[in-house]
Image 1 (cartoon, rainbow, N blue to C red):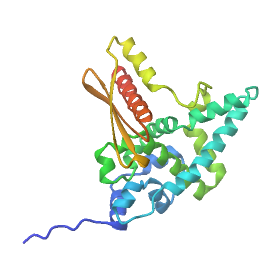
Image 2: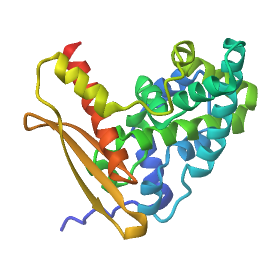
Image 3: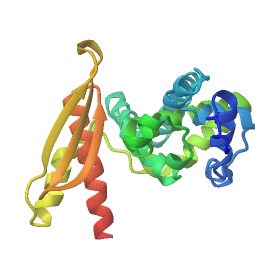
Image 4: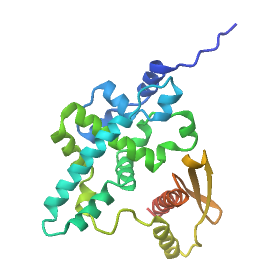
Length: 247
């Protein structure tokens, strides 16, 4: 009689999931070494932690990384634009450190495949969600700060965000991705995108999911605390997919 293999939980599940991926490319992208335990913590999303015995997650490191990122970007913009008013460089900073800006950088280093996610997030394509990618990027910066200090962490920020810093504008905090998508579709002589949104959870803590479709084809999926933000994320994903098709 064959015995069924028991499901791993807790630290065993964490180590097995972490060891299933080669993290050398990620560390090369960051340009620094990180201790194993610190790297595991930075990559552990709360969904994985909660499904495996309430393990520690990366939210505390995310808190640190947000501060390191904000100061590093603000100081660099201050140096790059000595004649611009505070209102302009403030908008530039907000655009760069926004969820969309962080998610773009995360995709450039292929961060999604390294994140430790619970089954629910994996089923809803969590590795591609802007919010998860952005939060994990901040957690990694927090980990770099904890191990190497501010100067090294600042160097990582300036390297990863070099292109965004060089091309920063004062257009605003968030790009209107629905408008951007529609302009791209019009240029291709394709019909307008359609959006369908749903929500789950109690009234005070709802999570919205939006789908962006074009001629019946699902082009993007977004998740957010309200319908508007979910649709914006869906439009962003759809726009990226269109651009990839053109490339």
